[in-house]
Length: 251
Image (tube, rainbow, N blue to C red; front, side):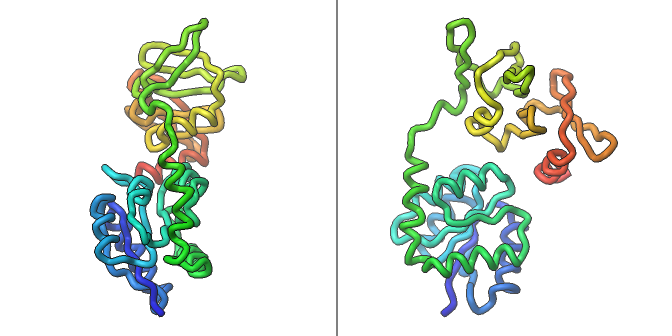
C-alpha cells in the first residue's frame, strides 16, 4: 500500500528536489499529495490531506517547522524534519523527532529515513513520536533577546542583538558587544545552545559570531575565510567552518 506524504518547505527548489527524489527512489511506496511553503499553510494542508508522513523544514519564516508540528491536531502524520543547519537538526532530534534529513541529502539517506518510519508504523506511531517534541516546545524558555551576564556582583541584561561575537580567551569566554566586552562564566557550548544559531555561527572551536554584525567576508589562502565586522574587527574562520559558512550563505 502506498503511503501519502506532504512537503512543507519555504524554498521551492528544496520542495522540487525532494519530490523528485521521492519519485525516483520511493515510487510505489510513497506518494507526494501536497506541498506548502510555510507553517500556517502546512497546518491547513495536513488537515485537508491527512497524510501518513510529513517532511517539514525546521527553519521557515513566521511559524517555523518545530512550532508548526506542535500545533498539528490529532491524528497527526509521522514527521521527518529537514534542515540545512546541524544545530536545528540536533535540537529537533533530541526533542523527540524520530529522524531528520540534513540538507543537502541524497536518495540513500531519504530511503533510510522513510524505511525507519515504515518500520515504526508511520502514522500509527505519530502521536507517540510527537509527544516529547510537544513537551519540549511547551517548556519554559529563557529570554531570547537578553543574555544575563554577571559583572562585579551585578547581573547585566545584555541585548543579544548588540553581541557581535563571543570568543574563548585564556579559558574564559568574552562576550563582545557594540558597547563593550564582558568576561563571563559561560562556556561557548552553553552560549551556542542559548543563542539563535540561525544568526550566531560557530566559526571555530573558540569563536561564535553574530552574522548580523558581519559586513564582509574575505578569502584566505587554504580555503579559510575572514569575517569583517561592522566595527572593523577581522575574525578568522576555520577551514571546515568556512565550507559550512559558504554553504549557509550560498556564496
